[in-house]
Length: 223
Ligand code: C5P
Image (cartoon, rainbow, N blue to C red; front, side, top):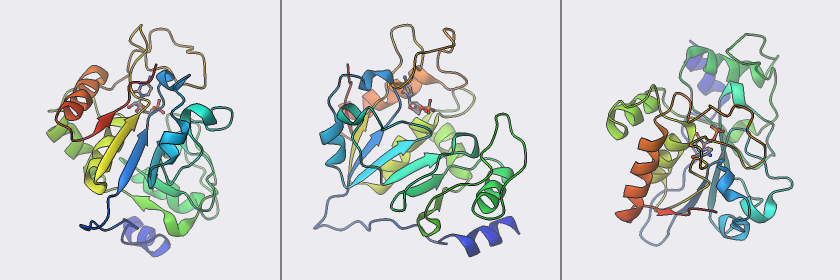
């Protein structure tokens, strides 16, 4: 039922660039690591056809280091922000409520609860919404992470998604700080014992480095 309603409201098939021998789909995946600060990656990031950002990753005030273009923003109800008319909202659902949230947030408003406060309504272009199959998280966890950690991070899933939909994947903004914490480029870390939360951060990082070594993607270390 929920899924039927979902695909009445949103495009039933995703708006992806088809693969073709006379085109190279170049994608930048921008994580939220503090190593972006001082990187001057902004213009390089914006040069990609597709720029994938995630959660509440800021732009204002950080343009020189992170760029200004966002073609796709991955989010959960708990990390949702309003988007402009040309950005794809990409939902990575893993509970039914995530799908219900999407329907209600574009309509009369969502009033349910979650482990964090959830935005009741959202501004974004309905026709550009994309929803991954909930099985995607399981696939990434089982196949790519060999079930390490509790579940994959948003950022790691974003990289794997990009490998599936792009010909060239450039990865920015990944990596813990020197204390092993996943701090963000726009804020001072509050929880000094954060580490990488429930996610197998160093496994994910090593897999990304390995993929870079195999030239499946290009990894930008930042500062
Ligand atoms: O914290 P948030 O989930 O919004 O960050 C997005 C993603 O960026 C994370 O899921 C993680 O994969 C990556 N990240 C990172 N190093 C950091 C912060 C985030 O690799 N210091």
